Image 1 (cartoon, rainbow, N blue to C red):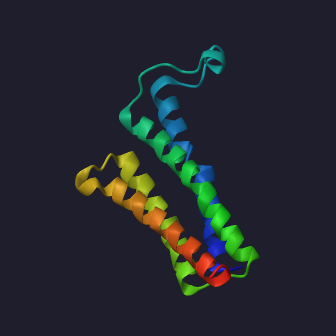
Image 2: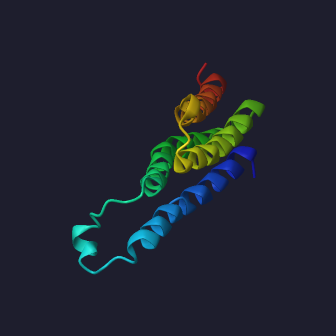
Length: 136
């Protein structure tokens, strides 16, 4: 398995687990869902860390499609370089750090935005390597 596919696999696992902190926070604060909440949804104010946990998960969902698509395309067209492997690893680790920073509410240095941007740049690196190898 290439490094890129390994990090796609690990990021998939991360994505599959990222909902857990939000649900734990909801249950700790308000208990399990009641039958009426399955229809009307839970509309109680919640602790900020619980909201941030949900947003961290949603944010990874939003970026995951591009990462998965690029890694799969790179694999299908046979592009695997030190840059694509490094970018895939960077994306995975940056997304873990992003989740920790976001859930913790760390606000100094615009860290969350910088980490997100670095992960986005990792996506651009993978895209560039594919384009450079197959389009130019």
